[in-house]
Amino acid sequence: MSLPEIVSREQWRAAREDLLAKEEALARAREALGAERRRMPMVGIDAEYVFEGGDGKATLLDLFDGRGQLVVHHFMFAPEWESGCRGCAAFLDQVGHLAHLKARDTSFAVVSRAPYTRILPFKARLGWTVPWYSSYDSDFNADFEATVSRPDGELAERQGLSCFLRDGDRVFHTYSAFGRGLDGLGSAAGLLELTARGRGHESDVLYHDEYDF
Image 1 (cartoon, rainbow, N blue to C red):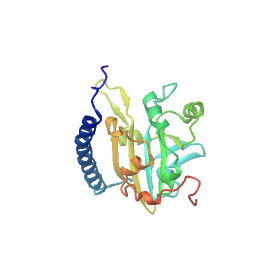
Image 2 (cartoon, rainbow, N blue to C red; image 1 turned 90 degrees about the vertical axis):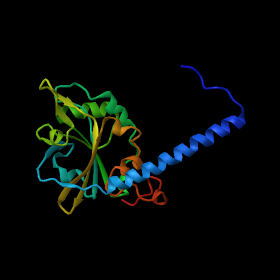
Image 3 (cartoon, rainbow, N blue to C red; image 1 turned 180 degrees about the vertical axis):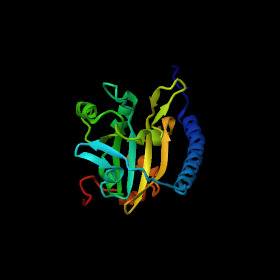
Image 4 (spheres, helix red, strand yellow; image 1 turned 45 degrees about the vertical axis):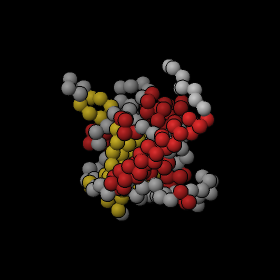
């Protein structure tokens, strides 16, 4: 790969100002897109999904852990695989301290089709402490397009994120993103941008040990 052109400080500053104008335009477009995303309609979830996690069986409502929003990471880990997807693992490594999500009334959970007996040792190996559930005995992955049928009839896994909102005991699906739609995500702010309520105000951010919960 060739190196960038060498220029004077004045030439660099002029180039930086040109690029900054484009970056600011992109930021404004991104903000407008985020506002449009938050105005999207939502779909009520009537299916009674059952997952298996560290505390046994759980419903989709249980994954909220009492909070108003839920972000699910669809981690590619098929039932017959010995270990999970490397790309999904790299993404999960980038997810920051969950306290910043919890402080904004949002829970985070990982869901894969692999049986929990395979998820548990893999999770321990990588040192993750995030809530992780198996959807092995449910249609959750298929219903939210994290597992799709290929033209040859075989099933294929897709890495993605799905966002949910609850009103009492009623759960709604608000947004999903797959593939390149996950680029640049992983931080609490990035994940919150995908939710119906957005990221909130930066002035509300505390050290993760200062939140009162």
